[in-house]
Length: 127
Image 1 (cartoon, one colour):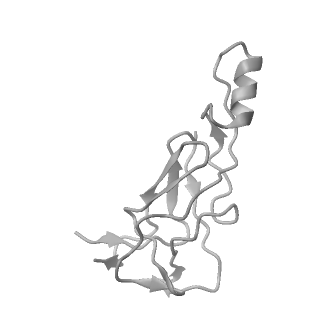
Image 2: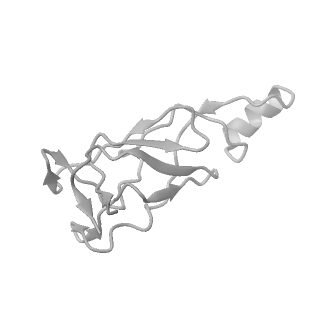
């Protein structure tokens, strides 16, 4: 079954984050069903500002807070450092870049895997 294209307002989650984030798609972009559609480069701090608190010991702030707490995992504020989403739509382009679909993932520099929980729409599908 084709995966939905991800839109502004989609919910995304990091495997080391404590809260889902709302994806912010900048304008101007392609608008479908009244909301901007995302491409695979929607992965910066303006698109996904935070997942609440981070629990990855690869994150230097979490590692130092945990060390200061004598080894007790101490989550710290999340500041994602993400790669472009992969693989992207093989058939739909937005601004010359592959559209972001609900099956894409991104990787955080601190080891987290980011997935789409809700694409922001349920009816715009791509192959």
